[in-house]
Length: 150
Image (tube, rainbow, N blue to C red; front, side, top):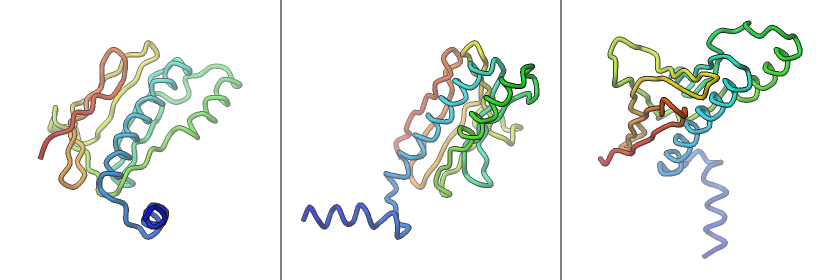
């Protein structure tokens, strides 16, 4: 029985079937990872960093708010390498993210600052019957994910 279980764990993701619970945990992890990367990059680079949800490729993207502000060439090169590795956090194509706070805002974007603070709209993230409200702690930049009970 154990061998069959191990084979299923190894085979199901390769066959394209991933249980919704696993996809939900991946979506939560992607949010936490993207917010953490943005917080660290803002601190390291000394400039604001944005996290945006790109619906076109269902991923959280980390981008500099104002590219080209860094003075030193060595510093700019070092940051480019870091941004290249920490800029894309994909989630399942079934995940949707909607802004709750302001109906006029079409794009979901959060800003992270070098002093550790952050700002962003309240949003709802959905995957099938599961839903989370997502906010950012304005003082620490950590995501606040609250699961909604269906």
